[in-house]
Image (tube, rainbow, N blue to C red; front, side, top):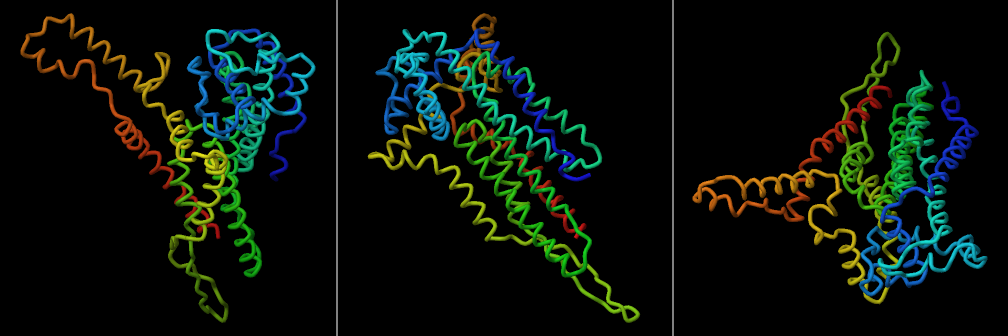
Length: 410
């Protein structure tokens, strides 16, 4: 089965997008969270203020909806607020100027057309989700050459995910677009791995050319996956927890090559090829190219801010916004993570400690630990990295096994 036969029909993909977009449009009048006000304020910031003020502005202390996403997402908001269509809607009067004004939180109620405009930007941004889902599912189809049904189901399950639809088109977020970028990166990684499995049975000279071409192809796919993921990090730093997996997998699978010791021996006046032991060799050239591509895609969006009059101040302010440790372990009571459970247990223990008939000597010993001490950001980071050790180890092993299969096939 060829790669073309495993591809999803473009017409079906387009029809699915139109049908789901119609459904999402019907959700425009539904409930919206304060995240709508957050993104509306980001549109206003990038529409009215120079780049140097984007990460400093808080409407003179009148809003808590300050810009706290990485620079590439800020440029995305700037594109939404300053493109030709937005300006045409403002000139025609359909979109009111107030929609893009810097407003305090006590007086920021949007108009109906402002809500429609903002909701439609999320609907259109889902094009990226469809592209990512298409590329990733098609890449899976290329791997599963004997059955082209699972990857079609994968595509539909991604784009029709009810949780994602409610989160983006009711609550209000752009997570579909972010997921689409991640899926594009994953598609590149799958294609890079798949290309190392290809093996053309030709004569010796043709085999060497095919092997070289295959290696170059898989390296380019993996560089594309790394570049896409780096761009994703420059849009939303929440995906930083996936970075160690990419690092260990690419370090093993991309930066190492497998060398085969081949010898030819004469048996009955006929040469026979014998393969020796497999050797892993680290390539500084591949590592350097990978590092440059990744850094350019990640650091690039930061450069306009570092070119301002106070680059150090810009960088410090950005870090404060991106990592607001002053908020505590959780952003609010609804934040769903393990530290929310930790704080819940702390409150339960505090109530129990106050009401339980505990002897004074024991109470004096326990008192310093009730409520539970709040871990420092450094300690939390260490715990997070320790928790990622099994997945990083597994990523390394996957890269190793892929290289071994390539060695066996070639």
